[in-house]
Length: 146
Figure (spheres, rainbow, N blue to C red):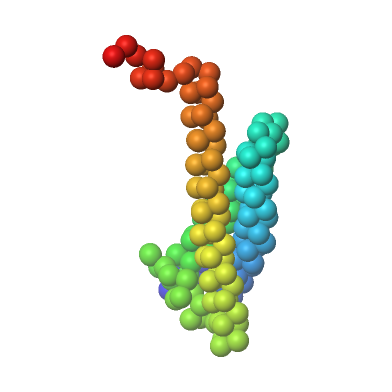
């Protein structure tokens, strides 16, 4: 196994990965709230609020992706190509390992829930857009001569 980065010990790299997981759990909690607010704003056709929320969601996603990339970079430096979090957690003592595994599983569930809410919001926005297009432009096949 190689050293993580210049000036960083293995222990510091592992600690940074664990801290990133904790930071992501908090950030995904905030993302869940943003996605729920986005859904409510979509239901109420609050376009101004939707724009603000979309910017916040994109900024939060960029931050989360940056931490994910850092986590993968550190894990690769520690474990080699194609690292698995289980391998990283195996480096920890039993109590820290159990806590890290629980935190990771919670984070994975939050990611799944955010994806579900994002899909829900996207479908609602698409349905509203389609409905507005029909209202504004009509449906050609309804009025076509027979």
